[in-house]
Amino acid sequence: MFFSFLLTAALVLGSAQPTVSAPAVAAHAPAAGPLEPCKIFGSVYLETDPARRGYCHGTVYVEPEEAFADVLVFKENNKLFADKAGLWADAPARDFADYVLLVVTDRSRADFSIHYTKVRSFAGCKN
Figure 1: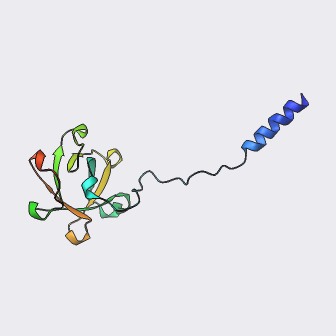
Figure 2: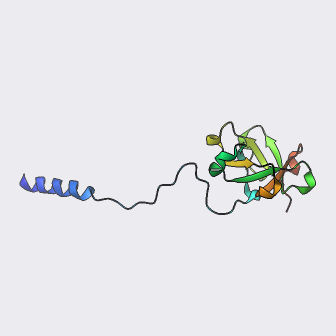
């Protein structure tokens, strides 16, 4: 009985030691590294409030002319069909999006520019 008490006490005290784990990362923090516009697909939420820039993966400028855009984007109705670069489905909220992008009005402040196309086969990178 005494030895079982000592064993139980040793197990309790041994598990009280702090364990070293990976640092916790905020759920809203964007991934580290540069944003590659040619790899963006899936559900995308376009943020317009500059105060929420910290929650965004990058900045984007909506180009009125197709010739100057870096990526041609086709809006899909269903997220399941947005499976290649340039195929984006609008996310209803920031929390449901694969990518959150801040829309800027100045092209020089954007990471890349997009233009919406009406033809699905034209979607993708222009590089």
